Length: 329
Image: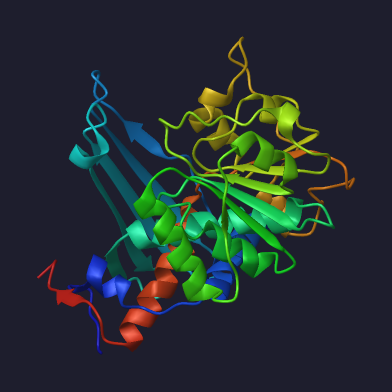
């Protein structure tokens, strides 16, 4: 389809839901985005945040540039009703992409599916780089949006995993986790655990994706030697960070802004040993000993959203999905 500078392809939630993309494709796309950033070819400035005094909503704006795909994009995120129950909250996130070669707009899209894929893909990359060589057991804490694809992505990057453990309390979420695992890995099963602390003591990799109101907070003393803990949401106590032998983050700057709930009594966070882009570039290794306990902090970088969003836009264009809007005519 011929394009000009007056039209924009708009991709709705339903447009993106119909796109078929493999987990390996998502992981490769996200990994390339990190490698490009580490090589200095991409830009990922700090996000802007606005929040009213009463804290009932929060808004973010994130601008970035992918130097391999040669695209520029801005992601916006808006949450409303933070003072209310989950069922009364509203959340909208969009991504608008421009081609920096042609100067033409590429697409504007709902970003929710991108986030639901990107985040567990990043956790899987962290697990691949940080897990001990003999890791065989993984525990996922939480069954929300980020917990539902955590296990399939972990199996994509760590196929040697044998035991898959799940800690969750919501029947719908537990069913969704089982359904996603069966869809991607029909020959694998997940064990639902009741004693989270005991399960954490058996796990080589722990991915904590629970919501803010979870009572679960695994302490460092429960972890086995060589364990890797990955924090996406909640479910880990601050001691897992402060007593870790190595601290890894997707971005130390972002961890110091969004990870304040993991600070010690004095309000401090430890120094990050390495960031994921550097590790993926091959310059340094996350793990230097099989018995090290590693803590990894997973916070989103907009360059990964841009890369994955552009991949979705390519697939949508091939399938002629979306609506062409004469926005500037």
